[in-house]
Image 1 (cartoon, rainbow, N blue to C red):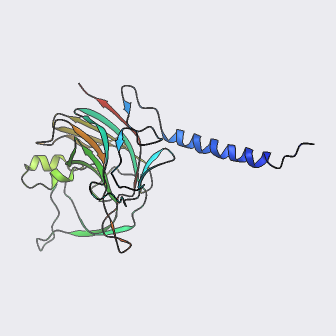
Image 2: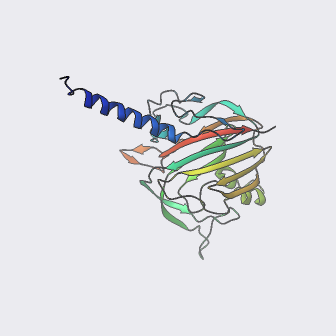
Image 3: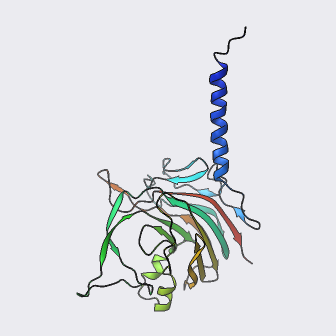
Length: 253
C-alpha cells in the first residue's frame, strides 16, 4: 500500500498557494472599457520605486502597500514612469490605521478658510490621522489629498492654502462633502483632469466639481504620496499608512 504521509502536506500546500493566488487576482479587477491599468497587482512595472527605499513600498496580495517608513534619502514618493496630460484616473485606496493623533486640525469652511472662535483665533481639534494623496501632473501642489480630517479626502491642499489664489479657486478645491468610508475600508476615486480643471468623485459623491488649478503643468507624472516619519520610535506626524489597488487611466483627447 502506497504511503500518504507526504501527499496530504503537499496537497495542503498546493491549496494554500491556490487560495493566495485567487485572493490576489480578486484584488485586481480588469480596468473599465477605455481605461489602461497602471498597476498589474504583481509588481511595480510602470512605477519608479524611490532609490534606497529598502522595501517599504511593496506589493502584498495584489495591492500596493506602504508603511510610511521609506529609507530613501531624497524623494520618498512612488512615481509613475509615464507622463499624462488630460485624463480620467480611477484608483481605490484605504487608510490601514491611524496611530497618530493630530492635535492641530482646523475646522475648514466650505470657502476653504478656517473657522475661528470668538477670540479671533483658529479653532483646532485633535483627530486620529493618516496622510497621503495622489500628485497630478508632477506637481505636489496639485495633490488630491487622502487623510483623516473632518473636511474629507479629495481636497487640493496646496491650492486651498495659497492665499495668493482668488477666493473662488480656494473654495473650488475644498470638498463639498465628506464621502470617506471608515478607516480600514476601501474607497474609490475618479479624478478627471482637463486643462486646468479638476473634478474629483469619491465613492460616487462629487466632492470637487470643475475646480480650477491656475498654473498647473500641462503634463506630468502621477505619484502616490509619502508622508510622516518616526522620531525615537514614535510617529512625529500623520503617516501614510495606506494601500492602493485597481489603478487605471483613460487619456482624453
